Length: 420
Image (cartoon, rainbow, N blue to C red; front, side, top):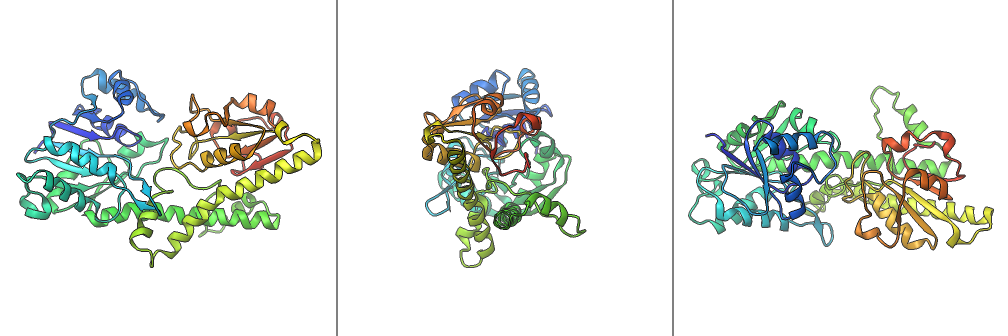
């Protein structure tokens, strides 16, 4: 069965590139989002997020009539749900946005439709989504009711792309296809093969859900090792970046680079989904999360020590000291601030410090609400000219390109080894 209309629910950092990828193959794509600004921007052929090459693909797709955006769901042959899945309370998964997406498409579902959940979710979420849809549309049958003969096919197909390289990896990377039945998997594979150059690797929905969580937990554990090593090296007076460079010369050692913590909506969140469902077994995964969540507080203590040294040597009052935080995004060269440890550090520093706190983030045009009234958005040159204490939090390429002679400050907390 062909897909005359494809609808993507959620036009954020994953949904919009996915919609654009389908539209680039001259498919009729309708993107749905509750954000009117995002909808209006896309319909002008522009984008509301920062992602290399995405703007060109969206512009071409909109001008060609293959992509449009709306706040209201439409009838389609395939639906891809790419909405946030944050956590609540004691790091418990919050499926409110997935449920809202399911409720929004239920009235327009028609027999033969394919519904794919892309959002990172706890094990069993795809089955839960199918149950929600079944309750809302008792006139249709779903895989958990009718198996292979169901009116609606349902699958879980997580993304595995790197922000900043989404438009390449979305097409090149292999895709895990987790259908609730083999028929569901086959139809989902058929859909992705419209633009996918990588392989469609078929499994069931529960394994696919766990696969996504496992990939991000693996990354989190390895980053935690590097971050813990940085704490030990600081205590021992050892340059952690030199140590890692030397250790990585071993043919079977590949230690990652430490930083101020772990951010983003994937690695900083997903491991908790495993912990929430398996609290007794997930000891290492929990510990890694705690190590990475604790790193921003260690950075804050390093900054406080630098400020104390500055006060002692300059004789200034605390209110006369200016701190500059370089970077707010959760990783280099993007504008995504979700779960960013740099954001957390800037917020805590500005609340603690009685003097001026500057935020240097070249990928945004205005401060996020959390920092408004507490920080000042500054350029790199302004920060280097005004600040007494520099805090390197995100190794954006523009920061790495700063000539060494421009950095005259004596008090530097460098969490990324840029100025080492």
